[in-house]
Length: 282
Image 1 (cartoon, helix red, strand yellow):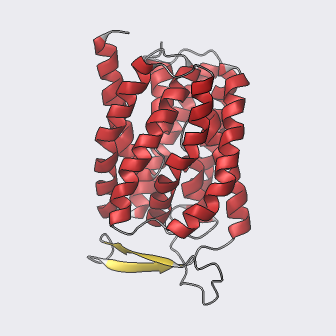
Image 2: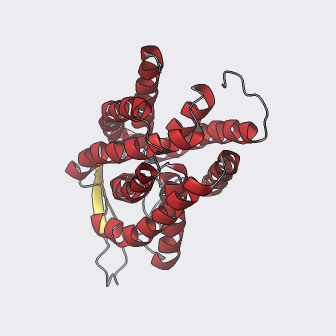
């Protein structure tokens, strides 16, 4: 692989790192289709590189969110159990599935999230619940609301939320995308967590989730250092910038950005799975 291609991967990963932290996706949702479609890198190699770089992106972005007290750490630790189990299953499926099957699963998953977000949008959270036996009620300071205000909320519907979290983990391990594409809208629309808290909590969860599947990629020789190293460096450059931007962005704007980008990438990958040429694709 030539130096120009590696530089292109680094810059692509940097942009993905910004967007990944901004909308809680971990960046992999952008890196995988771009590397596969526009750089001509084998899909499983792109998924493996994304899985490794997403761990770095999560650590960098989560550190900024943690300083601001935005992630709901207790909720994250609770949801990590089913998410990690799902991630291991997804990693094994990725190793043994055909590239076109992975592309179709990837595209369908993203289209599903777009539909959920189009119907729900960024939902305001209800007041904190008086009865909270698990102690999941949390708060954060939102600078974008009326010049700055404290938002307090209690996550609801934990059963459906954890079930979806297991599915998010499987998609994460199978596609190397971090699971945020499922987690953020699920936490916002179903568990009634404010979109900024959902984004920060998802970013906090992405790293531990993908570590399990990244080990599976490594054991099956899918990690190419020429692809993974610039991807990791790019994610490191972009992740913290995205997290800082998210502190001042409005929740509705984040949802709209997410929907537009996901629609383009999902359409591109789906067309490639059907054998239809995409302009600029390799």
